[in-house]
Length: 571
Image 1 (tube, rainbow, N blue to C red):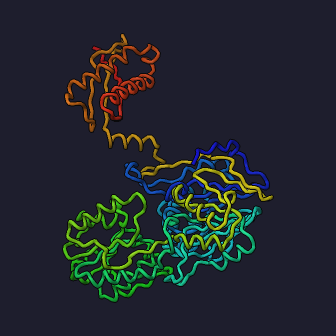
Image 2 (image 1 turned 30 degrees about the vertical axis):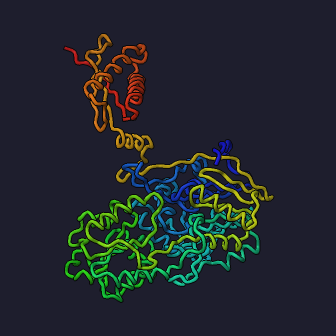
Image 3 (image 1 turned 30 degrees about the horizontal axis):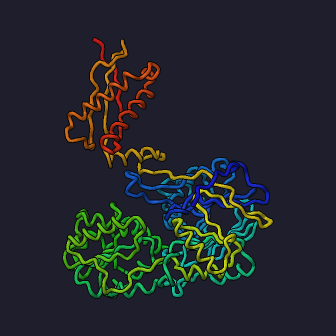
């Protein structure tokens, strides 16, 4: 996709007949979903999610959207509307609400998850407002009305949103599938979506996650078959890991544990929290006394235990990861046990998951799913379901969302195969603004500033991206310190520069290479004009550039170079 030009007048409020839709996260990537909806009288977010860091972002716990677009309009932000409670849709809320404490609307389970986050961050719980299925809320001064339409997904209470605006009805699918037999009986509201389509929908923003998968996503009920086979075939302890928000899957596993007379151990904070919430809201039924504490696991024979763990994506601090490192007292994985990963790998996590499975095999556990049947069903609709949604809504304009650009483009091709002409399909990217006008016009005036903000636990401010870059350099190529001792009287070097490195592989003769770098530092200092010598920052930049250049030329590496300039003590 060509780089979009800047939307030059983005800091000016929209015109009276104009509605802006601006994805500040979630397009061109998986995660960090956040959409700005902005008109002359209304300004709110649909979802406010986080992105989990990858291996090339060491020391970072979470990544949240840069809300720079909102700053010029800070006093006008009215609300956040939530489609469901997954972290990639709600995880950035504490950081957003700390800056803009506005009302947050969502279904009861979604807000139950948000409430826990707000408590942890000391934020006002009075901001949360519950909406029922098919409920409607007037946002701000009421120019736009939002309607929550139930959809099936891998978490309770997920919804699509219908926004009733002066520019027409906009439908945002959220994450969805069309499960004909949901375990909780809560069907995707296709009838309501068809009614909206009959009346006329201006624009559909639809989930593109599984557009590359043909057919339909398996029903959640089918997972029971494979999970039951795992219970039947396991003579030792059975370990099952899945997303802690997948309450329907957890219900199936717990029901099977009861049938096979196994007690259940929960391993992972989010499992405790989410199951507690689900029970309190009557979204989960637990047989009496089926749960036991970890410390009591050793009182039961291996074939009497089911261990539910967090860590399906290989997360290093999860319950499963701690178990595999032998850090859980009173509970071990041993030969004869089985580990079932009842989850799909999120793109980018494949290596971590492979290492996790390998470690389980080293401990003697069986990890193969061969012969079990299905143990996971995606919460995202496949191509036939995406086509069903387009046919039901019949939007004037189709806008794929959620996923990489390849996903978005493939979803656009699907719409084209159903009869949508190119001018009726808009492919957006992060920050690219789509404008709708009351007279039916539509355009894309350019991109607004977007980006990522890095969060590290224990730090009360965002971590600068340069810090992350420096950490990666240290991890890959190490660090080189060049120390220069300067005579404050004459301004000349009082000694030969010294070179110290850590994690940096020099050439075969380390001593000779250090002398080479010291010579470059000395010559750079001596050649520097007096104005640079007197300016400490300019001098360090000059030294850093010269040393980087020679190191890159001679070793093809790029270590972090830190020049240190000290004054020689006077006798």
